[in-house]
Amino acid sequence: MALMSAEKIIIGNWKSYKKGGEALEWFRAFEEGLRGKDITSKTVVICPPFTLLHLMNDLNRRWTYELYKQGIQIKIGAQDVSPFGEGKYTGEVNAEQLTEFVDWVIIGHSERRGALKETDDILIKKVEQAKAAGLKIVYCVENENVSIPEGVDVVAYEPPTAIGTGKPDTPENANLVAGLIKERNLYVQKVIYGGSVDPSNVVSFISQPNIDGVLPGGASLDPEKFLQLVLANPQ
Ligand code: PGA
Image 1 (cartoon, rainbow, N blue to C red):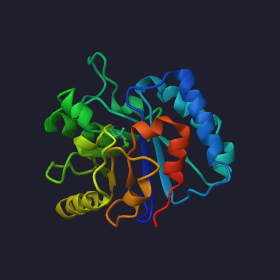
Image 2: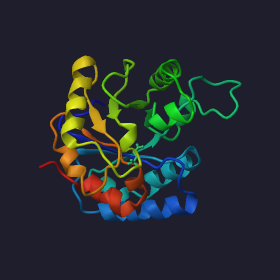
Image 3: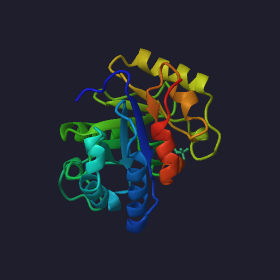
């Protein structure tokens, strides 16, 4: 399904946080908070660690009847995918396996490019695998100069200095970079911003004409904060 142009995309990245009980509590609070609210112009994706994908997918199917009646559908995403298909790749989770639980996948997060030494070559393979499996791809870049493989659905502009530091980029600069990314990669239709997004600054980012949503990490761990991010509307 194509993303509508006015739609805002809110993607929560839980990173390597939470165990089952916490995920359950989070989901319950988030689901309750969404009842009676109108977020039909939003795409909401939650990206838990691999260990919680089964549970979160299950909760999302069982506990969302009230939301479904309101026209709200939450999506689950993975934070990474194997560059390989099925096979002898110990520890890897391949794209086809992910399709049992998720619709989306994050590829190329700066924490993986940095701490896990993922290169552009590896990331291209991940994009190919994810695309062949029919997953929607959020591809992270640190600036407008990073090459972006064709076929990604959303690009996330995430300057590493802003990630987890409480020091976000300015909305104006993020808008500029998002505009350059779209200009240089004509197939990229959606660019979101990530890096210390929280309820106090989200509107300033999503009000920018070139910014189509946000990718919060830390703020997505708290269901109340994530709810505020999801409910925020551009001015
Ligand atoms: P942060 O993380 O919101 O905690 O800065 C964003 C991200 O890493 O995607």
